[in-house]
Length: 281
Ligand code: DGL
Image (cartoon, rainbow, N blue to C red; front, top):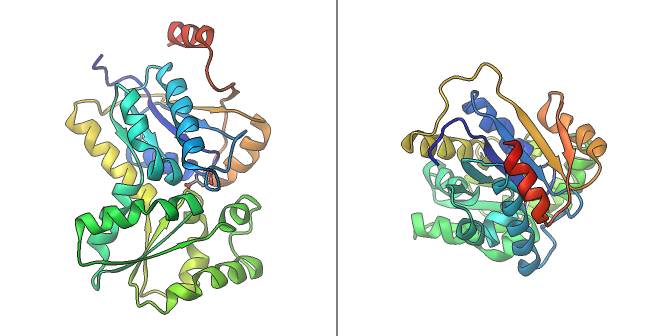
């Protein structure tokens, strides 16, 4: 059904994808948005490919019950290892964060020495490496997994002594490579932007894939005639698989604004819920 008034669906392993939601809401202010944070099973970044794919499929099946018009996979880890599995079962356009991030990096870099930081799973998948090399075969890509960045951000330690120490330790190898562009290849990393910038210096451009992903999603909706041009009261609804209270607390820090509508759900979604959701929308 081609109907622009349907909501955009976004999912992530937890709260991190709110950095993407924030950009989507900024660039497409009239859109209704439903967000699923799989907070009971976060983090995805340390899990096997098989497990991440299973979670991604279950998240997609849930969002599809809400009659969405597009799925944005905000999670870099899922985008790296499971995007085609999501696209296979979804009958709506699917946008991940890897390709937009890689495109922006190639456009930004002058010396074609590009750094990528992300979770273990994202770095091991070489997804950014492949995308960058497809766009610019002569580019040199330097990737580094930074597993402590996610808990650091969730603890709220995005600046200060501890953040600086941890960021410095992980990025010290990258500083000597001569990169002029660094992809922040994880939902949480944009919150560490100031600290990363202070370590890498102003000559290294930081690519926030959230901004690029929102831009690509808007372009796609526009192209398909599905972009909303007006909506007096756009809603943001949040579904989580664990405590709504913890999500609210951390989420408000990520978004910088109150989260009013949060509901806990179980995954995988049962047939009775599929039916109920379809009746409600
Ligand atoms: N959302 C994940 C990502 O962007 C980070 C958190 C996790 O490991 O689940 O890769």
